[in-house]
Amino acid sequence: MATLGGLKDSGPSSQNSAEINALGRFSVDEHNKKENGLLEFVRVVKAQEQVVAGTMHHLTVEAIDAGKKKLYEAKIWVKPWMNFKELQDFKHVGDAPGGAVE
Image 1 (cartoon, rainbow, N blue to C red):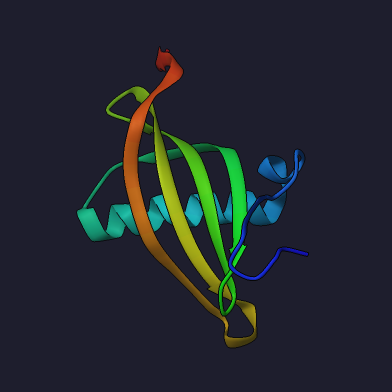
Image 2 (image 1 turned 135 degrees about the vertical axis):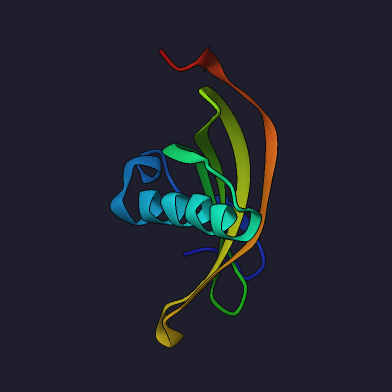
C-alpha cells in the first residue's frame, strides 16, 4: 500500500499490466483529443503511483509521433469509486531509444 502523498514505484511487472497499459493508452488518447494530436501509443516504460484522494498515476509513455518514437510523462488521476479518470498532465521529455520507426 502506498503512503498517503508518497510516490512509489508500481512494481517491476506493472509496466506490462493491463491496467497500467490501459492508463498509458488513455493518456495518449486524451492528449490527442485536447491537442488535436496524432500520437500512437506504444508502451508504458515506467509506472509510479501516489495516493491523493484516489490515485495519481505517474507514467513514462513511449509513443510514435510522425514516425519517431518519443517519450512522454503523463499524470492520470483515478478515483475508481466515482468512476473518475482524468489526465492531469502530459509532456514530451525526450526521444525514445531506437528513434525512428521502420
